[in-house]
Length: 417
Ligand code: CTP
Image (cartoon, rainbow, N blue to C red):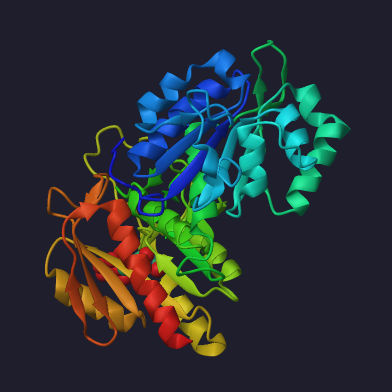
């Protein structure tokens, strides 16, 4: 995993509150990953949290002091003059992960009996909590009522996951993995970004056209650039629908995920989500042809001696052309972005597609370059717009490329008013 800073987290001040749950070991990883992503993480530990993990562990991964008490005479305390407004002042986000049933109750009732509770009362930034406890405790009406109170006050509650507890019991109450927690944190920090309130559709991955029950015609698209675009749009505050073929990649937290297989299914899904969408980014590698028929049974070698076999292929629908026609009638989506992966005549081919498909922007990449294109984590692209603008971007991670494309989309949407 690359430790490149994550823009939406970079230099943001995050207070990470941790409470007494065995799930605290995951919070150490969270603190580490947030720090690697460029966030400034101040950890506040409750007394019971310190029975599971030493403050030194968090200080080691964050490189910053860890706060353990309100009382200025003790090590790990804040200077007295700020003890009451606490760390909340100037913080971008307060995350409490894991939060126990006890601390949920303390927050719901406004108790201020330790530094974490005081900070939660004083904080004016968004508050995100991730409950972790035994399934019975989580389901108990006392906990659920307290969570409802907190939700009504605007606290963002990350649903615990189902699974096996340390006790050996199975139920709902497990702290989600770091990737999921990071996704929720990114979403909370991205609120109010350049795409806040905008609906964005992203397609990703390569379509697969079945030939028989075991075989498909596929392509080499990994979906990485499309998933990075969905994440960048989420980081910018958009409401994102990701229409993708099956992928091993984790779905970005907060995206509405629609799985498709073929070009025809992708067309249906795109058209279904199009009305009211502000932007469509067609990063998927859509098959241009499919087998003319799908055999009901596995195709056998008909002639044991034949050296060749001919497949008849028929055209699939061109999704962007259908979108162009629908947009001409309805005005939606307001911005359409296409992608052109080419192995020759990059700019000429991309320019031609931009015009033919009625796009506002096309992201062109030369798939013969070893550091760009399918499966690798970097990309080297050129952005071509409908006004004739040509902007080559430097070689960068797919995440950075995605951010730049999303920034262009935000500017285009702004122009359209
Ligand atoms: N695309 C689409 N529907 C298709 C094929 C492609 O909407 N049936 C979209 C892709 O998602 C991409 C853009 O069109 O955003 C360009 O895709 P590409 O495969 O490069 O273009 P084609 O129109 O298929 O042109 P060619 O195969 O001749 O290069």
